[in-house]
Each structure stands twice: as C-alpha cells, then as structure tokens.
Length: 92
Image 1 (cartoon, rainbow, N blue to C red):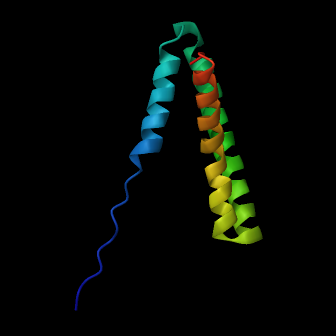
Image 2 (cartoon, rainbow, N blue to C red):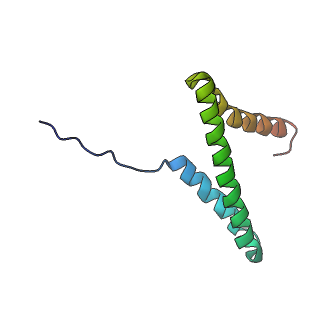
Image 3 (cartoon, one colour):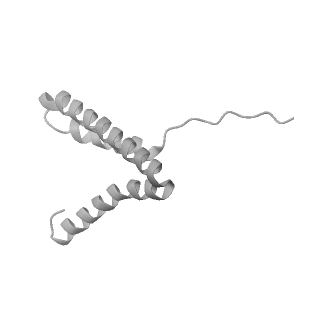
C-alpha cells in the first residue's frame, strides 16, 4: 500500500517578493522614519489583507467562484488601468 506524503508547505514567491520590495523602499528613506513607516506599511498590508479576505468571502457566499474571482481580479485591473493612464500622460 502506498504511503501518503505530506504536502510541502512553501509560501508563494510573488507575495514574498512584493513584501520585500516594499520594505526595501521604506529602508531607502530617512533612517529616523524607518520604524514608523515600516509600522504603517505592515499595518496597511494587514488591513488590506483583511478587507480582501472579507470581500472574497462575501463574494463566494453570494455567487460562488465566479463572483469571487471577479472581485479578486478587480484590484489588479484597476492598478493596471491607472498605470497605463499615467504612462500615457507621461507621468510614470
């Protein structure tokens, strides 16, 4: 009889890289403000995660995976549209 193997638990590289780049940008600023800025950054990251989790749970309960996927797709699409509009206006 084959034995079941436990899945390897690893964190996804994209969120870890995004977090690392955010902290790197904070540490590039004034040394006196690093602690406060890092605290604000982590608190907003936590709050955004909580809001995203609540929105995803609401969307799934309301209409299943279709609405949950659309709700999850909205923030990156808004960010992409904002980037493209600012790039078209010459303000990167």
